[in-house]
Image 1 (cartoon, rainbow, N blue to C red):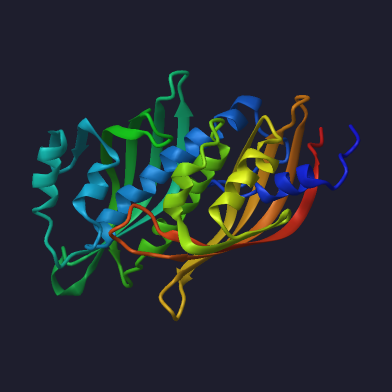
Image 2 (image 1 turned 90 degrees about the vertical axis):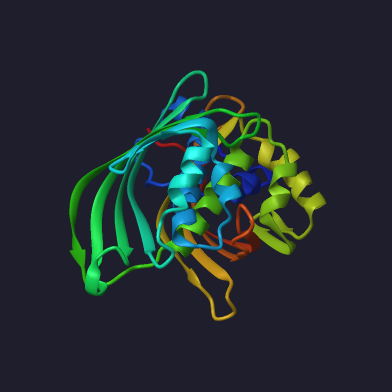
Length: 312
């Protein structure tokens, strides 16, 4: 098919390119995977939030309960429990001097017709404080989880089963709170802008009081401008999703967080044809651990591969 003119439509599709967790295959994605992309992002949002609570003592228990269903079942080597109160009792027993780190190695999502998500995850867990003499424990863990839909875009965990696949020690503890905090922010952003409902109101929570989204279609510096973009240029595809690679995140000298990541985007046009693009995003965010999410100060976009029809 011929390419559309480089209009607000093309710029919008380029601007939409943000992220997920694995790099895209050259053959493209199945149509249903594109349409379900926002559900996967929403589940990954909750996954990365789960780890933050154990990595930063300033995260309030209320934020952790926010991701768990009221009758959530959690099973690990420590035993099995059901519900918020049992969970609160267990985490209250974790020694305050422990340092924990959770690096996600793999996350596979299966999405049912009713919106239920089965999320299977492999991580490397590090702990400083459990072993004597400052020895750092390392464990390979797997998570088998189920998340159920809610009245918002974010599902809640109804089941979490944690199994240990390996155990050892390492020389150096790696703190990954910042990375996990940024990944939850990015996946939530994607879940919101890919959601067919395209409700702008929840996005307020993740935008700083003063922000600049420097997309190909122009800079957006206020919420009214964002609402216009979401309802207009960003809505000119039937569905879209994003996959990420080359994620890098850290803390700036002023305490804010900085993230750079490459995004592979795939979208479905109104005529059913699929399009692709690739960009590099650089975000700066301000973090208050008491909030559910960090807040975006700025997002800058570099086009790596222009908006184009998907090749056969």
